[in-house]
Length: 93
Image (cartoon, rainbow, N blue to C red; front, side, top):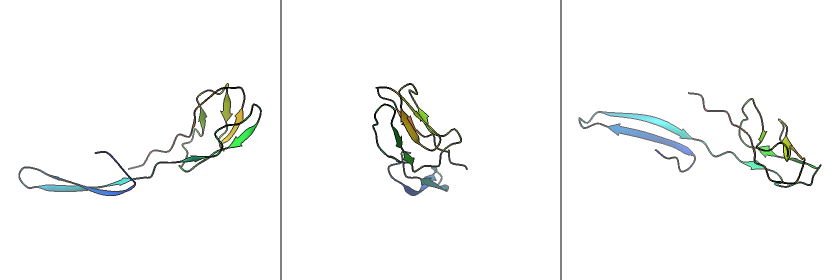
């Protein structure tokens, strides 16, 4: 199965003897991150995520270029490019 949009899908399986079983599957919308995507060295920028953060908070792939704290406050350290992301909590069954 491949999710294509947010919503609820009912998945039904029927075997070759006509027995059926159904299951409800919920697809949540993708989280978003908003805020400025650039900053001058030494400047700060606030990012906001729409997802519920995992306990580890925000992360920078290259903290030597930019750091980010648990509130999403980015500090530009040096010239370059980094990826900033927020791990999200996994669904609980």
